Length: 408
Image 1 (cartoon, helix red, strand yellow):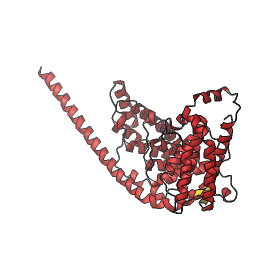
Image 2 (cartoon, helix red, strand yellow):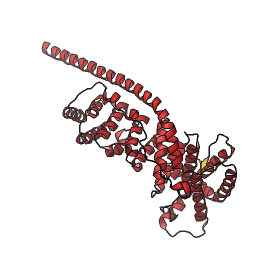
Image 3 (cartoon, rainbow, N blue to C red):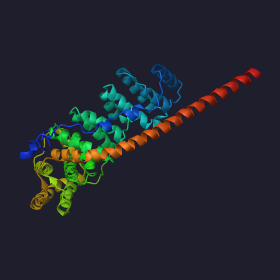
Image 4 (spheres, rainbow, N blue to C red):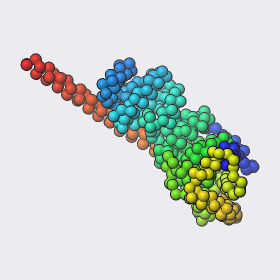
C-alpha cells in the first residue's frame, strides 16, 4: 500500500491492436449543436446594470430576488466580464430563500453563455461547486459542454462533466452514455497518474454508465469499473467506496466483477469482454493479493492508521482475495475456450460503438430538446404574466393607500 499513488500501466498494455490510433472526430453533429432554436426565443432585453442594482437593493432589504430576474441577467450577458458578474448573482441566488426556483432554462443559458464567451472554466467551476451555485445539468446541456472539450482533445475536463453526471445519476439518454464512455476510455488510454479518489470516480462512472449499455463496451466497462472499485475497497475499506457516491454499501465489489465474467460465460448474444479490461483486473487482483498477504507491517504511520480504520468486513474482504484470484483464473480459462474475449482495445470498441449509434440517438434527443424549449417558453411567459399582475396589484394597493391617506 506504500505504492498506492504508484502509476500502473494497466491499460493499453497488450500488444497488437492496443497501440492502434483511433481517428479524432467531432462527436455530436452540427444539427445537435445548432443554437438556432435557442436563439429564436422571444427576447427580453434588459440593462445588466439596472438588474444588478435591483438585485443588490432587494438583497439589502432582506427580500427574495425572483428566478425571472436571475434568468434575465444570464440571458443578457454580452461579454466575458459579465460572465463573472452573473456567477456572483447565481451564487447569491443559491444562498437566498428562493434558491429552489432556479430555472432549468437559466442553467442551460448559463452554459451556452459560458461556451459563447470562452468561459468554460466558469462553467466547470459552477458545476464542480453545484451545491454553491445550483448548477445541475440535464443531459442535453451536459452533452454540448462535454463535446466542446472533446473537440479539443481535453478529456480531463470532459471527464469532469461526466463525473458530475454520474454523481447526479443523470445518465438515461443514450447520447450521454456514449459520450461519457468515449471520454472515459480516451482518458484512461492516456495512462494518467491516478490518486485513489480518481480511481473511485472512474470506477463508479465506468460501472454506472456501463450498466446502461448491453454490449461489449458496456460489459467491459462494468468489469473495469468494478475492478477499480474493488481495489479501493481492498486498500481503503468499503466506506471509501460509497461515501458521497451513488453506490451501494454492501461489500464485495471484486466479487461483483467476477459475476460479470460468470454472466458472460452464460451469455449467447455475441457480446464479449475486452481482454484489456480482463488484464487490468488480473493486475489489480494479483497486486492486491500479494501486498495484503505480506507479513511485514509498513512503517508509514499514515498507512498504519488506515489499517486501524478498516472494519471487520474490510478485513474479511481481504481474506477473500486468494479465492477471488483462483476463481478469476478459472473463469479466464473458460472464457478463452468459449471465445468470449475481444482482442481490440476498449477505446477502439467504444469508437466503433459511437460511430454506429450516436447519430441515430441524436434525432430523438434533438426532438425532446425542442419540446423542452417550448415548455420553457410557456413557463417563462407564465412567470412574466404573473410578474405583471403582481406589479399591477402592488400599484393599485399603493394608490389605494395614498387615496386613503389623502382622505384623512
